[in-house]
Image (tube, rainbow, N blue to C red; front, side, top):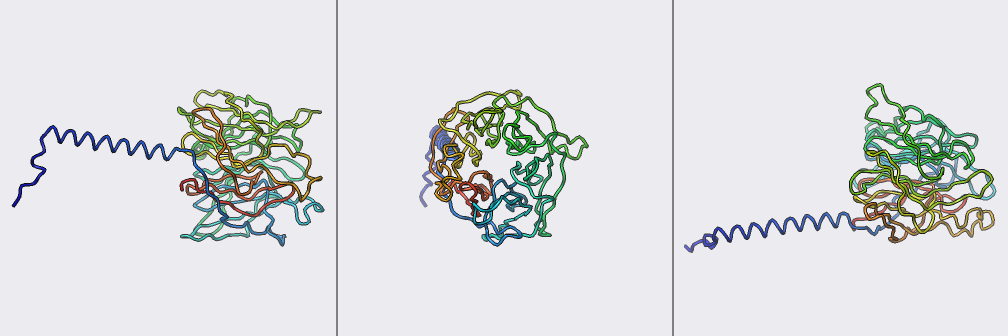
Length: 378
């Protein structure tokens, strides 16, 4: 019987082989980490169609809904739309709650649930406790209410739990979370854009069982008062921070200004810092943090056709399809592909690692019921 060849490997050779193995393992790990954090090109497809609201015959879609994920189900609630013919009817405010469940590889809508009022243009964010919904407005006033929507997958129903109301009314504001701590920034107190504020609030849901659940006033936002900004949390290389991007602003008696600035709030330092502005404005777009240092804007209004909806009507081309990416570490902007169709005044929700765009407005008065899902890993 021949001698095992491995018995001839010297001690020094074993050390060299071990070093090579470890080096290759480390290089492979680094390579995988780099690939995970590379800028991604998203592939999009239509996931589902939002069902018609109760009392409406057509599946019209909605603008300004609350949306997020609870117990592996997508929740879309409230919003507003215009019945057909779009330019002959007034805006309708909705109280519907739609739930899209994924069971194995199939998706099923659960409907028939209602909010406590018809409302739209509030703020929402996914947490461990459910989808937190804050503020909003209807045809008459702006609200300060806050609540959590949770999907009970066993009973197939929605659970709504009240939260402390925001200390002031707010609509079209920015909202995000770090862990289960909710942040709300800017937005408008009244129906007019001129009522936009610089207020900045936080609510720590992890304190909900300690009888100290209340909104905390933080340092005012350092940018201009605004509405319809895009707000998201992301790492800056050292800390997880809050980013406020674009929106629109209006001083009394002045024209509306569409904004291209970006601001970073560092919770550890409690400071605001202006970062590099984009080359164009972003307003009412959908936004999500991707990887460890990227913020993606999946289309937005640049304001170039603002106020021309009644002239263009059905000929309105819609909103910019370009996907822009901000790198929080390098402080740079780049363009990275296009959306098949841009939905504004909606949300980009992270669902099982995919980005889901929950209905929205595709041109003035016209909504789309399509739910888009984007895969950035292929």
